[in-house]
Image (cartoon, rainbow, N blue to C red; front, side):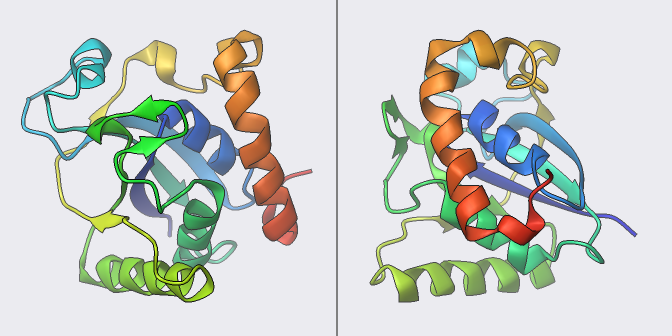
Length: 175
């Protein structure tokens, strides 16, 4: 039976591209979570005034890739030590956060942050939050596989994330 977790680690195009390369990931949906506005638009979220984060909903087969592995990949492919930013993307919409579906996922999120902190001397600012999920507009879905490979921003940001994934989680990456 599939499991789903929602994470936010900067631009959702970039995070989506990472998880689309993972064996056992069945789908990745870009969207918005953690804010106060019902059915926010990309334009609204980009202002930083809605409280939403750009996130991805990752649906995966836990018999192939575990939740701890998914969370370690998340922590290892963005910079969880950056408060409300990833690279040149600045604002609360780019925060590092995990949105667990239940207490079990919350416990695993806490463990993943602790593992990262142990290796990196306790510097993660990743939060554990709750919120209602809103799928992003259609043109944001599967962005890297379409427009993204012609977008200079994506070409600068996504390949290094994919290299981190391949280096640290080689046995879990699609060929």
